[in-house]
Image 1 (tube, rainbow, N blue to C red):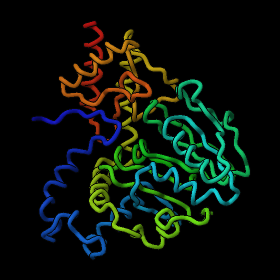
Image 2: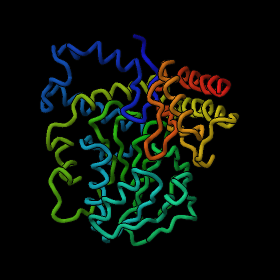
Image 3: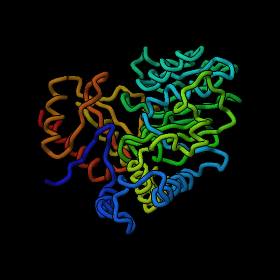
Image 4: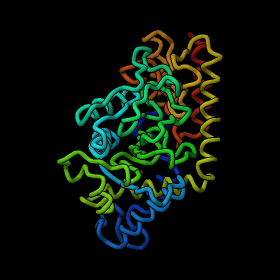
Length: 358
């Protein structure tokens, strides 16, 4: 069976070159006679892999030396709690910009540990736009400001980095990390689940400034960023194979020209789909144009039966996992780094053909 174009929001496509390299190394990595997933995480061979992946990530993202990098488990969801537990005790307050499902989840967790408040909330307009800077009601006494840069479910993206003064900025970048260059120094904490742009699930990456830590007390050992930093992300057995695969993805990004090249390619892919939407009399998107995501294109016909027919016919044509999230309905095409232009062009052509047939 030939491979399909997988438009899943996550776990998502992994670059074919990465899968082939992993397959080549499945039985013997680097002459060790073992697969990476069989190696002791305390052994020299795996330690070299682990530290090498961190070095690659630092280079690709241009992470400043004074920032720490952690490879953890629990996905971005655990980070909803960990960010609050490790930062909120400075003033007991925190601001959350609620612009989608995952930022709402983070806000819910933040309220468990202090006085978390919504500095923006677009739920009343079905999360269809990103608030402008002057629409943010920021508290200068907040311990941090949290936001989710790209809203996977609703197809919106912050196309600017909020100005928060001296208050550290915490950002969930799960569905847009590694898709474009960014200035890491603008953030206090960046976290992301791996299963969209970095590789398979099981791994969460955290990039942070150690000087902003003010944990609640008591704090569980695994949840303590300072303890994880001291242990080098190895308080317990880390997600060894997921880290290794992320290293292969980083190699692939470098081979394609780095994050600037990824951004240019991703913009071209997104433009193909949005052009098809903007020139369609059948398909529409509720997302404000200025807030459109480059990674997740959400659209519908406005008719549930037609949406269902579209998803089924697309799957029969080798374009799978296009059904929208249950909170939104319709369709969602997730076009992360690994999605080739060929897949996007095929979907756009199918949209036009489907419209002509109904």
